[in-house]
Every structure is written in C-alpha cells, then in structure tokens.
Length: 133
Length: 133
DNA sequence: CTTGAAATCAGTAATGATTACTAATATTAA
DNA sequence: TTAATATTAGTAATCATTACTGATTTCAAG
Image (cartoon, rainbow over all chains, first blue to last red):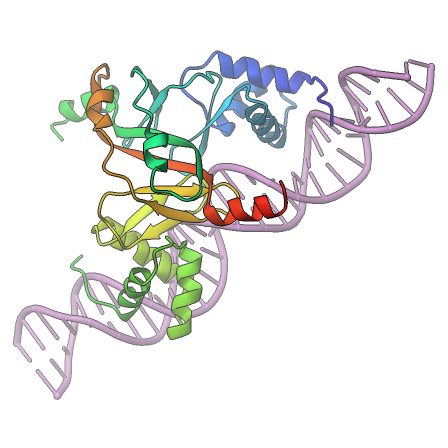
C-alpha cells in the first residue's frame, strides 16, 4: 500500500508542528477543522496513527486514558500534571540506559522503555498557593 | 465514609494475591465469578479502584489501553510483551532516582515517575524462532 | 439481640476514546 | 486520460470504564 499524499494528513502534521503541548486527537480535530471544516474525526485518528507508525510523529501514552501526540520525535521526557492533565516537555539530559540494566535477569528481549514523570505543574502550584490549599 | 468489609472485596483481593501476572479487571471478574457467580463487573471495578486508593494493591497502566492490577505493592518494574500483551515482573535493582534529576530545570513539583519496559517475552521469542520469523 | 444510618451491591445504562465500515473522492503511475 | 488504489467523510460499532438506582449488607449504638 504505497503512501499517497493527502491534504488532510499534511494539515494534521502541520498543526502538530506548531504545538509544544502534545495535543490529543480531539484537540487536533477541533483545530484542523478551522482550516478544513469538512475533515472528519476518523481521518484525524487514522492519520495520527499512520504518522506515528512511519515515525514522523510520536504517540504519547501517559496513563491518563487519552493518547497525546508530539511532532518532536527526538528522545525526551514528559511530565503530566495530576491537577490539570497538561503534558509538558522536561529539560533533562538523557537518563542512564535502564534497558540494558533491566535485561540482565530477563529471558525475553527488551527493545525499549518508557519513563514519564508526574506531579503538579507550575500553573497549578501557583493556583494552590493562592488559595492556601 | 468509613470502610465496611465486604465479601466481594475480600474475594477480589484474595484472587489477586494468587496471581503474579497482573490481570485486568475483566480477568479478575471472570475468575472471581467462579467462586461468586453473582458478582457484577461494576463491583469488581469499584473495588479494584478502592483497593488501589487505599494502597492495598497497585494499578498498572502500561499504555495498552487496559488497566492491570497487582497485589504486590512493593516498588518493582514491569515489562509488557508487544506480541502477546502479557505483563511480567522484572528482577531489577532499583533504578537511579530519576525524579530528582528530572526536577532540576522544572518549575513545578515532580512527585513521582513511572518506568516500564517493552519488547518480546520468552514465550513469544520461542514461537518466533520456531517459525523462523 | 434489634435497629437504622451508611456502605455496598447487582444490574444496567451511559460515557468517552478509539476503531471499523462503506460508498464516494482524490492521487498517481502508466 | 485512465484505471488501480489509497484516502476520505460520515456514521456505526466496539471496548474499557464509570454512573445510576433501588435492593441488600454491615455495624455501631441502643
């Protein structure tokens, strides 16, 4: 199934590149719709999945029940705020190679690992201190 | 809301303690039903959530779209097989404290992190080599 | 031992994210 | 230009999980 270009796929990729906040499929949908009001949600899902498969974007699963997407495919770490749910890039040097460490006493093969961080983002910290929570 | 004991909750906890394979809510349901055919799926979900909240079990989100549960609440790492989806405990010494490292250049507060590993389990490795995949 | 307030239950309906289906449209190599 | 095929819009279906509701259990106080 040779890939054929599509306006919709390009719009989706384009939009994702303008954002640093790792939007969900639904956010991509509502935004791309401003430019292309006829695009369908299914098309957004299909193309996000396809773009992730061919490595042009990254799918992020932070355990909040929704998939997030990131046009930055370089290795970096993510933080999710327990209060507002926003996903933020972390400025961290690459962590030690835990994969090889973990593979020592394991009979199968480990091909990768995911690390993500959670807590409270700057915004939500401020809100809390204002309200003395 | 003072906790009151319930047969159903005890059965769920009991079953979970017999398993090392981190079953999903649905697996818990079908198994506990052998002993208590009237238990409802909603009860299983509610109690798994409650047990996780009070720290008696652990909820594991491995990004496969389903929650897994573990009666072992000690800190340890998990592996998920990309082929068969099974979740397995890893025998790894505790990894370096990445949380504090990650918090250096971050304005909010990081309260924890999750690391999990993926690849192919022993079983699926064997299947592949048998079939020369 | 009763009793009654509150927690819990079974059963079922509702939700929300995602995927599957289908007939129409767009892309592209020949 | 054409014809094979990838892609689309729109909608229906799926799947995990949560919410609701009236009945049942639990348990502390009398």
